[in-house]
Amino acid sequence: MAETLGPPLELRDRAGRPLADIVVVESPTALAHEAGELFAQAAADAIDRRGRFMVALAGGATPRGLYACLAAEPFLGRVGWPRTWIFFGDERCVPPTDRNSNYLTAHEALLAHVPVPSGQIFRIPGEAARPALAAAEYDRMLRTVFEPEPVRFDLALLGLGIDGHVASLFPGAPALEERDRLVVAVETRAAVVPNRITLTLPVFNAARRVLFLAAGVEKARPVADALRNAASPSPAARVRPIDGTLTWVLDRAAAGSLG
Ligand code: 6PG
Image (cartoon, rainbow, N blue to C red):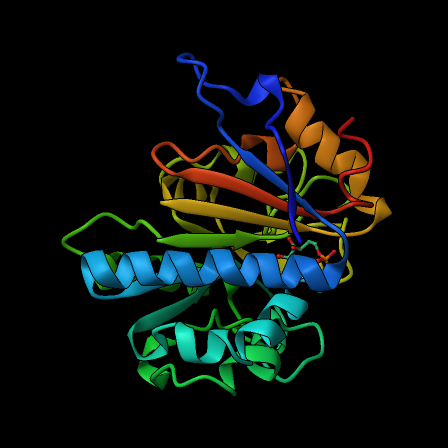
């Protein structure tokens, strides 16, 4: 059963309203189910209001449990998969068959098991010979798919790196300061796969709902830094939806430094 911690004071807006909900659960399994519930609620709300659910999936390993949970009952039957449109928050510059591919992770755990029309799955071509060109094309695609509305995801899923990175936005990276482009190619020495394509902060901060997932004691420090230190330069601390909700679902270990 999820136990919810009140949001830290530093995350309140000027009117004193909490900017983030922190949900602490007992285990990675409970985290997957809690996140599944939030995913299903976001989907139902979006489909009711706008006829479709636009979601950006997170990469890395943490969301695997969520994806497997969504591919099984009750979420398999609850989520409006035929009206769901799948995008990716970032991708490593590897082929979609590579074990490091975020698309492969999502495909194996979720997309191969749910009835999302293939024309509604927008993979970032990590195999592209020119990542910057692929990023520009993904940027154009997003603007086209969302028009005449601005690019605004109903839900953006994010994991958290131990250095506080989100998607492929790493500490100190110029991409963190990007204000106009929605998608950029980056190169980092901080990751196994150095070349990546990533959505930028303006996209995440335009989302209606941002949902962070973090589990494990190694995430306790970056979680506390992102949530307790309003002046933190951490990329995670800069995810602040302008007109949307921010929820962190943590297991007890990852919440261990929140106090
Ligand atoms: C990526 C992810 C990245 C990930 C964090 C956490 O492509 O690597 O987008 O931002 O979410 O590195 O990864 P884990 O969940 O594997 O700890």
